[in-house]
Length: 108
Image 1: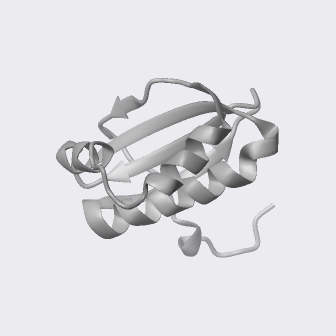
Image 2: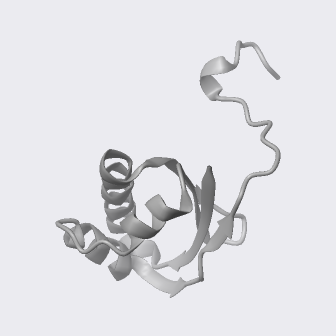
């Protein structure tokens, strides 16, 4: 498995466009390029973060370098970005995340 952490500072008035474009790209990556899914987060620092899992670095590189029909989705995202930080490439070493489907309520 291969993981990428993205970070952006976004224009508040363009958040909807960013989220729409991000969602389209995530689904494209799952369907065509071996992505295992992604989560979008808003940080306490008001920056936005995306944690994306991939079957391999090669799959991520193929999707990242692809010039395909999702250019409109990319334009939506780019129109909302004030500052784009370089992606952080990570290899998982230990994994203790629990899927929310595995949680049995009630929890405090």
